[in-house]
Length: 119
Image 1 (cartoon, rainbow, N blue to C red):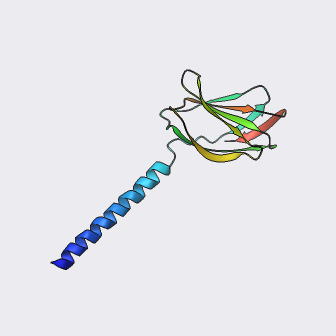
Image 2: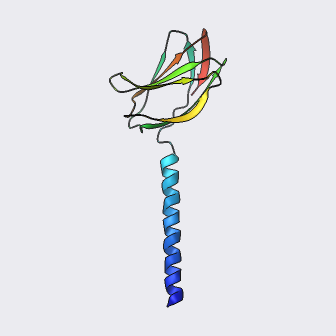
Image 3: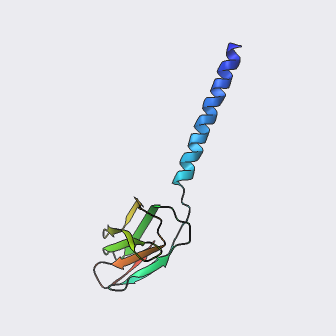
């Protein structure tokens, strides 16, 4: 009887660890992937509309050639600014937790004349 209880307890621990692992994968995986090459010109921001629904936690990875400083802004459905991130010349790969779900992403060149960015 003791071996049966240990076996059941072991199975429950296995099941618990399996479910925790699945939930970790689920919450880290992106719900929406936007991959695009964008040509930016100084003074002309590029606006991208996101398909709904979008999580308030946004992972981003941006690189620009030539390397110029850019601003990544998140806008709600009314066009109001939720948050913005100043990206270094090398680009960036990080995440941001927004106060509410974004509807649009705006990329704006902060310096130089023009660049091409991969989002």
